[in-house]
Image (cartoon, each protein chain N blue to C red):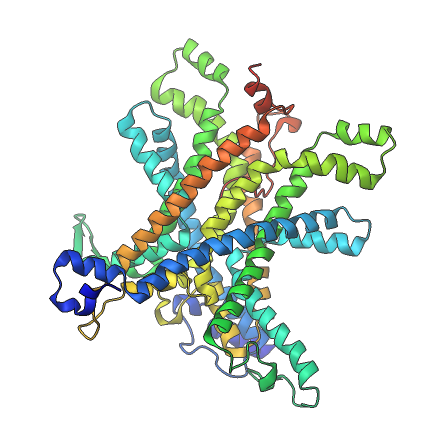
Length: 280
Length: 291
């Protein structure tokens, strides 16, 4: 047990470059597998949370754009949604990586007055940024389709009532469409978030190299499976971690769902269910 | 391929492109598109079958079968599909070799797992080390196919069991009132009627299946991703057709291929949906009749 504690200290944060450099090679214990794969999960959570957070706001813009009368706004939104929903995420990763590699290697400095930020294009070829950008666009496109559908199903009576009270333009969107849209879209959006977190496990298998063997949960599972010739331990460990992660997502989104539905009778509230029928 | 192409270094730009795109390796690339289509053509019906059997399993009176099928169709909700694509072919391969080892080399007493090695006797290897290349490729493809069928069978099981629940209760109750047995109700009322409810889910599943095909690359099959990386990588003057790193263009080509596939599929599926909705007592069916 005490040795497992030592393993946790050595490898608990290995995936983000803290702790022992060298990965276990011989006499690999179950503890090492559980700890290192769990450490890799940090990356999955990082990719998932950042992509969902920023993707959410971009997807709202895309959804509103797709619903707009002006072709100048509609067509770009529709195109982004079509390209990212119509092609495999795996190919998107490959394409993006090769594209980022070809970019000229330049450094750009942002002078913000009190602090100077430097951005370099070589970071784009690293998974933490390049992979994240692809995931961001991907989830934004899928979510935009969900939110677009929800905007279309906001009851027309609510809109007419708003106009009768003189609520138009931005305040009509924020105060009338927005709450209904979120409430209607939420169960599907929960699905999208779950499958996005699952999709994060593709990044390190798709061109983006794992720098200094710092990879995600599946990367380490694959490592152990290659090293021990025994797939029956590492893959079920990854599976357990992802099931736990899925349950946590369902819980958090469930709390939000309750909040969005708080004004409705209990029977009228939409329930969150993982459904394969919707998207992804 | 063409006589003009005998010496690529003397060609004009136009002929260079023609000759470049018709090399033997490029034909292997074009054939790999067929591999994707073959995979789709076999995996789709196979996973539908897996899903259907699993759905029947969830309604079984035997609780072991019931729990097993419920676990099977629900596992894809919590576990990423990539995990299965990496695990299933490897596990199956070891399983087959383990069985063959026990049967063929029953006299070997050494354990199969020796530390970090998986050792089976030579004649139990699958495929045999003496086998030709295409046997190895076919074996890898078959394992990949089984992995696809298992994963998408679970997805299909979700869709089909949802569709079965969507068939109006009155239909099955009417059957029971007419003295149908449970079996007759299932096969004559539930199964014929569930498809219209399953079509949206199955259409979506077909799209997911198309978008999952590049994962063949992870399974060691020489598919379009493999060839795009192989052909696109920069070629020095050692090669007949030297060029810089063109992988980004090859992947752009693959993106277009997949966009076309999903775009065409969505058109066909929409038509199918309209066709199947005709005469149905659903909202879509009524709209078609002009209600």
